[in-house]
Image 1: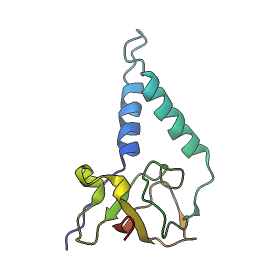
Image 2: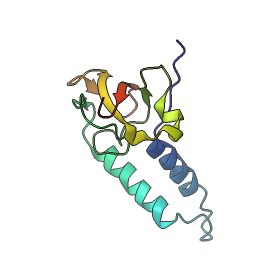
Image 3: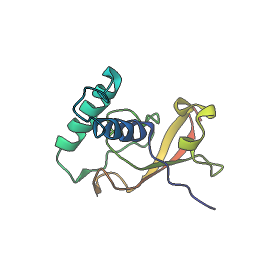
Amino acid sequence: MQRHLATTTAATMLAGVLTACGTDSGSGAGTASPSAAAAGSIYARCQAQEWPRPMPDLEGRPFDPLGKDLMCFNHIEAMAPDGHDVMADPANGLDAWTVKSSDPGPGAKVRMTTPITLQLRPAGG
């Protein structure tokens, strides 16, 4: 089964913020929007945390890539039982899933850049 590495929506948004912040030529052009500034603030808070840190125990919890436990990770692969990556399939709704297991497992020391693979199951199933 081919697995696809997907970045979270937050990481994609943050990449855009960093790109926009790097384009300011001093003329006032390229100033980040309020939502971009908020994303930059989230990125700064993530950077300021102590890394590596223990992987949270997500088993049995709703899948929430923008929640406090996952929002600082740059690479999340979220696999449905049929093998498709939920992060690349927003039509199914990210909130329709519950975490079955994670790799690395709970307690493993991880960095922001550590690839995280979550096995999911349908919520309520």
